Length: 115
Length: 111
Image 1 (cartoon, each protein chain N blue to C red):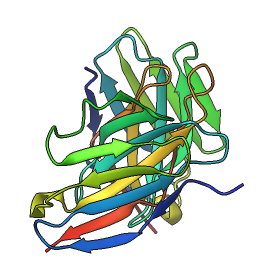
Image 2: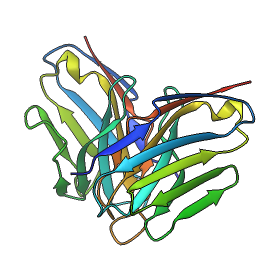
Image 3: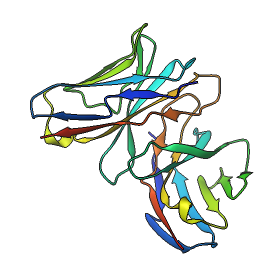
């Protein structure tokens, strides 16, 4: 049973470019969470999605950031017109869903570097 | 929203000693409290969790205690080993919702 998959593992972008991060949840998991971790800091919640629905995006900046979890395929976190402050590790986590256990299983992360 | 505070930010112990990390939370609705271990450059790994209907949980050398009245919970690691060295994060959540993480504790176990 494969764990949470993220790609790419490392991503380098120049200022103004777009970054697209992908997350495939564990098999059978329908809930995806994205977190951002700045160097030597904790994990900050960004957005919580279920298939085709954004449940909570209160942690995501209003501009330049968007997320989706389509019916088919991975969840995508998209950052437009990246700036140096976007450099961080982006982790996604998945869980089976509400009503079941809360455990969230993390992917290996995507380390974004903005030059 | 929820606010989780974690102390200490760094902790050094001699191999074989115990380590204790403490967290407080603000939202009394939170009912799930996981602890994650993150090694350098790796993903956070769940090591133990506790739900609000339980006061204590133990798994070999690791234990977690929860005081709902005071809104604090703690991680206890006994007989520490060098491989326990990592950053530990506590978190609080309400069923099915996002985790609110503490700022992390960097634990160093000195051989």
